[in-house]
Structure formats: C-alpha cells, structure tokens
Amino acid sequence: MSERPVIFLSAAEASGDHHAAVLISALKRRLPDARFVGAAGPEMAAAGCEVIIDLTKQASMLGGPFLKILYYRRAVKKLQQAIKDIRPDIHVPVDSPALNWHLCKAAKAAGVAVMYYVAPQVWAWAPWRIKKVRRLTDHVACLLPFEEEYFRSRGVAATYVGHPLFDQLPAQPAAANCPDLAEAWLDGNWRVAILPGSRPGEISKLAPAMAATAEAIRQRWPDAKCTFTAINEAAAGQIRAAAGSDVDIAVGRTAEVLAESHFAVVASGTVTLEVAHFGVPMVIAYNVGIWQKVIYNLVARHLIRTRQLSLVNILAGRKIVPELMPWFAGVQELADTVIREMDDYGSLHATREKLLKLTAPLAVPPPGSASDNVADIITGMLKKK
Image (cartoon, rainbow, N blue to C red):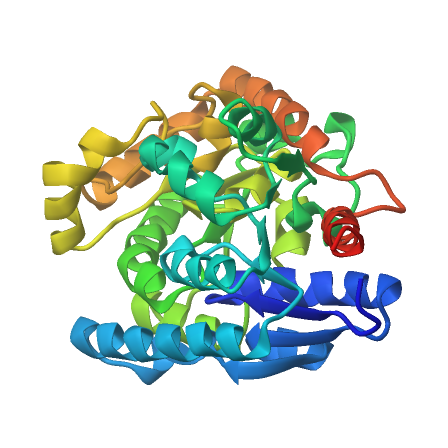
C-alpha cells in the first residue's frame, strides 16, 4: 500500500453522498494520510473529499430530460478522464449504477481495483447483468443479508456489511415499549406518520393523495393526529405547496415522529426500513408518471424478478404490509387501504412483531458500524496492492 493512498469515490444522489461521507470518516481513522477525490456532494466535501463534480445538485439545476442527458454525458466523460489521469489506488462507487457502471469500466481499464458500496440490485430487475458485476468489480459490499450469498454463488466476491441507515438510528425498541396500539384502536387517539419521500417529483405526486388520506383518517377518528415528515426546509416547502399550508410537518425529525407513531403512510424506498425499525405498521405507496407507466407495462414488469416491489416485503420474502405500487388508482384506494389496515387490530399487532424481527439483523452491533465494515474491506484491498 502506498504511503498516501488515493481513493476515488463516486456518488450521484444525496443518500450516496451521505453514505460516502460517513465512509470517508471511517477510512480516515484507518488511513489518516489518504487522499479522497471524486464525484462528491456537500457531505463528502465536508468530510474531506476533493470534488471533481457534484451530481447531487443536478435535480435543481436542470429542466428537461434532454438537458439531463447532455449534462450526464459530459459529467461521465469528465469523471472517466479523471480516473485515467489520477489512477487512484481504488475506486469506490456508491449506489447509482446508471453512473457507476461507466466509471467502473474506466477504472478497470486503468488497472484500478473496484469496491462497490451498496450492491446493485440486479437480483430484482436485471439478473443477466451479474456478468457485468463480475467483470467490473473486485468486491461488493451488500446492505441486505441475502445479497451476499446471491453474489457469491454467482462468482462475485461479496460481503454483507449491515445497513448504514441503522448506524444513525437509536436502538430498536422492544414491542412492549412501542406506542400502545390497543389504546389507539379503542379510543381513536392515533398518531400517524406521513412520509411522502424526499425528491421533489415524489412529493408532488404523493403528498396531495397522502394529505387527502390524512383527512379521511381524521374524519374516521377525529382525535387522530397526522404528521408529515420532511428531511429539510426545502422538502417541507414542497410538501406545503403540494398538500396545503395547513398540514402538520416535522422537519428533520423523522425518527422522533416514528418513535411516537402507531401507523404510517410511506413512499416506497429505504425509509420503509426505518419505519419497520420502529415497529410501525404501514401502507407503502408510490405513483409514477405517465411515461413510466407506459415503460413499466411494456418492458419493466416483464423484467422484474421479485414478486414484491417494496423493500420491506422483498426483504421478508412475502407480503407483510400492503404496497400500492408502482402506482395506485387514486385517493380513494389509498385511503380505503389505510383505514382498513388501521381497523384491524389483530393485523396491526402481528405486523409490528414481523417488522421488528425483520429489521433487527440489519443493525451492526456497537461499537462497530456498516461504514466500519466497508472501511475494513477497502483497507484490506489496499494492503494487498
């Protein structure tokens, strides 16, 4: 290993920027003289990464799909050239296969080892691309327990590292310490968390229907309190614009809201695992645009290899919570599904137990963390150079 190893990281979205920033901190504890450089967002930059380009800002910078294609093509070429010029000791792509396959190819062409963080979900939608994973990576860090065996059995070096989401959450509560479902069911004093996603497109499509569902809940149970959660003030503003200025919004307090909630209405995504961690029964909803619906009906539904589409149900290997996706028929379907679930006390209690059991193995026991496990893999690979 060189005295000052160069680690090239590439993240394209806010979540990847966060995971990579925490990883950089873990690597600095092991490799204090390492240089970090790559496609980085503000969190990675704050952690000490040299920014070649920030792809996390593109959503707010660009208008139409055509401009985005041109922007990405230029960005990919710039990053590929940077890999060729810098010749880092290792490339760490973080999630975002659409970007990172191109960069992995450039890294391998330059003789650079590749350690992929957040395993591409080829098991769900493109199993034939396992050949690409095998060709373009040297090791894959998996966030879900079943992924390690999936990749290893197909000739890909892989390690289950735990899920970094759970490094940030408080310890999982015991079922007995969760909010009292029986009390809420009997007196109607529900606390319902509404999570419409973090991206502007998600919020605009989901928040109006979720707000109407919250109103249906209050009509059924007048003492119910429904609280939207937003990751920041910008997202809160988007929620108000889509759902109305009078909705109750908690900014940057998703974990606190979930810890006090009896039920949740949730946009599909990683956040469903956070909801499950707190043992909160939920309905998962999503709504794609018209062109995505066309593409799904013509192509995607024939490619998807999992019977379930939401992450919670995929991890369980069966349906344990309702999922209305890739879209739902309208407000009435969403509201009816939510109220039906909330009305069924036996199902609520059983679902809580299943969710707590499902997510318990995803947290790395302290004092370790998922990021520490990934940093150990990277350090080991560098020592072998």
